[in-house]
Length: 484
Image (cartoon, rainbow, N blue to C red):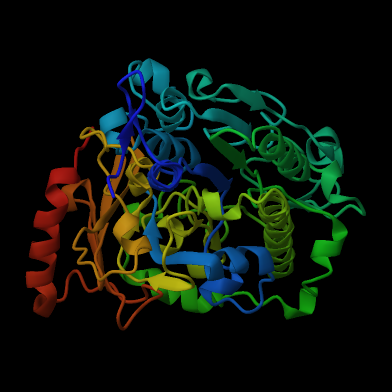
């Protein structure tokens, strides 16, 4: 039987069965245009349940990890909010953008750069932001556009909750209730009001992100939800503080920390200086530090609950399988380890971040990747994961092979840097080693064996038997090292 016949006008006529088969085949082959949910947290380290910290309660972030791929060794390119976020959103290293401080502007430094948001706008996506994606002075810029890039978004939302409105109620150390209230962005301070999640800025971020998802569910969307917590001051509803009894909060030994730092170059301890060690502030007691650590963990569990709202919104709208979900932090964070607090160091604790990718295109579930990866890898990953061609100017590498059910060889190290006009250091992380040079090695070097010393206690850089490793890693680091 012929596959087709000719009608009276001389046109080919296909039997209905063949027509339906062709239509089905063409529909089946139509490429999926996945949504993207880009979830950012501020100052979040890897003290999470899915990363092995059994004390910290994070069931929703743990669920994301179970749904997809957890990167156990993901690193920021600069352990400071502004440079790190500019690097992520442009896919370029800080030395390429020249964005090296929180007061910098990506449009002034690199006016023609195409950001992640711009890329997906050009591909026909709705692109919206709520909360902190580019740098904001936290908490002073909450409720404003901060240092946001206006060209990156169709819509921008800047909620402001009681954590900002009632800053005067925040308890700051030293001084407690009478402690000064200015400069809360670099402080050891907390507040635990009896309140609802949606009264807080980050609760409002989650609520607005849910609304954005529901409003745009019938078109491809790139929705960036940026949470301000657990950045200081650590403010969350009291119910999250109640998850962490103060007597259960352990603090590292300061005596051990002093011994740990004896073989560390002085420049490795700069920013706020060694003179105010420990914790960067004179007069901080161990009990006050413990209270702040409790508050940090409470803030993490608060954020976890907001992440749960976002997952539920995708589930309720049948979008979970068609959405790439990325969960990340801009850098790591010290909570008393080595006697330090905050970030802006080239130690593992400061540059290592949580990174989880799940949802559309992730063939592996509950998979753990040990290879070192970088946050600049996110831009090319999302480009390739959405079926587009990666711009050769992007300096990261796509992580898509890790998400597939295949074996993959990855030999790219992770590079991070700390910059101040007179104090600059670069650090390279391979599968086993972290090596750091300060001012090209003139101000000191560090080498840590993460196979045997994951806490970076013993600096091996000056041990003769490890000089061949120092030389090899120094050569690998050299192309990235630009001193100003």
